[in-house]
Structures are given as structure tokens and as C-alpha cells.
Length: 492
Image 1 (cartoon, rainbow, N blue to C red):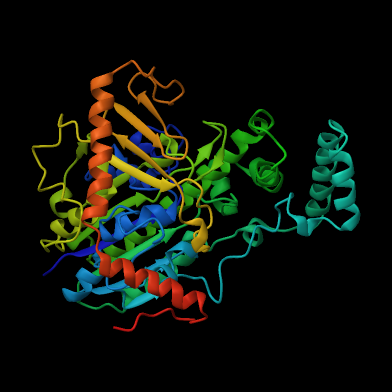
Image 2: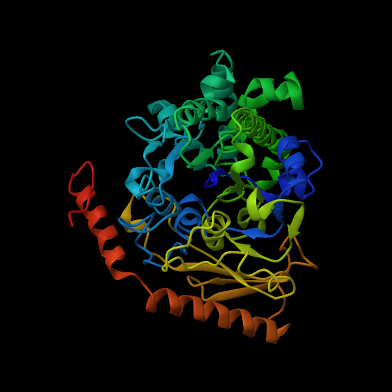
């Protein structure tokens, strides 16, 4: 009987916040136990960040800018792991926690018999507690804001008073963490997926789950806060999130809330882990576990002021954003094994298909790790990560086209190329894992030359091997949507 595949992707999950990669807080007890009989990729690197630059590699084994900087998501008719498995007779289901960048608008429903993105009639609601939003200010507040900020230091005093005012109002509302959460929690996603699994029958299946619990705003289930920290953090969740979201506060002031915010973030991870445990129990109960490939990874990480910022901006390719966990269990990944060489997520889809003994499409850019067996350790393989630094809203096609930000990373060094400033920075990750001190331009010239050559070859290959048919189809899809086509479908 053909093996089934479960792929779990967790939004914003950093590699250094899971127990099986050394994190001391108990965020992932289920995955930690599973790691003992799995293949762990300790150096898994995304192909792009954030989500809209990460998932083309995960689902279609393609670098995010390979079809052009203006193309976001999966192109119409572009082969993906879902379409390959659907054509191979698999039942395919996706249950995704309302991430608007993983919607049919960007082609992620392709190949799925069942696709539930939990978006309803639109994107998730905006964070109603963003204290700097104009909607929170009436005309008088706007006038005071302008007047006070024209008086130098008085502006900072006004910002603080206004923040405290908003908090006083919000604290009287009595809102629960559940009502403040922006995305459906992992248990909601798993409940729907469980119903789908109950109806699959004897057919092999591909199940993709995407969880958003670690994503901001950080409002975890109160139940998991009891497991990890008690009522104290829950009581301060509203204030911690609101303070963390302030645009008028610099990194130094934000540090006062950092530990609280990280605790809330970690609680979101723990809740996802508990629901993964529920899923594993269900698969075992239905005698599906032993005939299943099970993979868990993330689309990118999250920054907590390591380089002065928050969240996951496309303007940075620092380790806290691009280094993610990756665990595979079952099939060729059975038994405890650790791969320490850099593993690009471009290689993920062909690796999973190889584990199922299904050939990857010819236009997949990656290669199965099993095909690379024996060549990886000590190979000095350098992986590519890329984004458009200025593209913070891919829904606007005009913002997609900008200078490229590109990183070339091997097991020891990382070269970051900023095409906007025509600057490059080389880091020795062994000696400077926090990327705080770029090496002088005169240092490690052979390394810099080697990584620059890798970057040049990547860009040349992206252009010369570009699938122009897919590119044009994606452009046409976007054009039709701009012109009012609610479906945005492409006519053959």
C-alpha cells in the first residue's frame, strides 16, 4: 500500500525555539519525543522570507523570484507536491489557519481536492489593539498628536499618555484572549482536518496543515499558559502585545516587554505541539501512523529585537528569520539521524516525494536529500535565500518590484547582498552566530569570492531557466484580478 504524507508548516517558528534543537523551555515535548525516531535537519534554511517568499520553495521546489520579482505565489499549472500526488491517486487536503498569502489568490489551492484556508469572505481582521492606528484617534487626539510632536520631547510624553489612555479603555472591555486572537487556533484547524481524515478511507492521502499560533499578535490559548507560566502572563497579554506593537517606542524601551512577549510566543508554539500530538494519536488510532511520512517545518522565524526589529520583515535575512526547524519521520527518515549541513527548503518537496517513491517533476529546482546521501556532510554546500526588501504588501503588484536582497549561506559563512545599496556583508557564523560583526572587506577573500560566484550563478540560472509560460500565466491571473475578475482564472 502506498504511503501517505502529512506536512505541517508552522508560521514564525524559529529553529532555536524548539526543544529538539536545544531550546531549554518546554515548547515542543511532543516533537522532542518524535525526534528520537526521526531525521532532524538542524540547519534547515528557508528559500525566502516572509511567507509569500517562503512557500514557492516548500510547495513547488522553486526559488521565490525565479519567475520574476513581480510574481508572487504559485503560477497557474505550475507543478507542486500537491498536484503531483493528486495525479498519483492521492486524496489531497489542506487546512490553513487564515494566512491570506496561502490562498487561491496566490495559487495554493492547486492540486487539492479539499482546500480550507479559513479566510471566509476576506483576510483576517486587523489587530484592533494597534495603539498607533489612526482609527483609534478622534479629531482632537489627532490635533494634539501633531501639536505635541511639534514641540520636541513633548511628543514622547504625549505618546506615552495616549498609550496609557488606550490601555485603560481596553482593560475595561473584559476581552478574553480567544476574542483577541487574530487567526484560528491549531485545535480549530485540526478538528476540521480530523473530519476529513475520517472520510479518506483506504486511499493514500496528502494532508497539509498550516498553523498560525506563534504569529503576532501573541494571544495563545489560556489553557497552554497554565501549562507554561500561569495566570500572570495571561493577565498582561493585552498590555504586552499593545506595547510591542508601538511605533513610537525604540528597541531600548521595547526590551522591557521582550520577555513577556517571548513567553506568549513560546506558548503559541506549545499549543501547536500539543495539537500535533493529537494528530499523531489519531493516526495511530486509525493504524495510519506506520504507513505515513510525517514532516514538520516552518515558513520563517520571528525577530525579538536581536537586530533591533520585531516580527518578520522582508528587509532582513538574519538567522532568526531564515533558520527553521525541520523534522521528518517515517520511510527513509526512520531512526534517529541528524543532518547538520545546510538544507534548503527548495529540496523539501523532492525529498518528500522521494520518500514516497514518486518521481519529482523535471522542473523542480531542488534535489532529494536521499539522492544526495553521502555527499552532504562536509560538502560546503551553500544555499540561497532571497526577498524583495521593500515588498511588505504583495497584494499591491506595484510593491513587488524592487531591489533584491539575497543571502548565500553555508555551514560556516553567510554573505548578504543588498542590491538597493550595492553593499555586501560577510559573517562568520561559527565565531559570530548572532551576526553582530560583519567581517572587514579585506578578510576571507576566497570565501567571499566563492559565495559571490554562487550568488551570480543563482541569478543567471533564475533568468535563463525561467518558465516563461508560467510567468505569463501568473501575470495574466493578476491582471484579471485587478480588472475585477473575482476568480482570476486563466483561460487556456
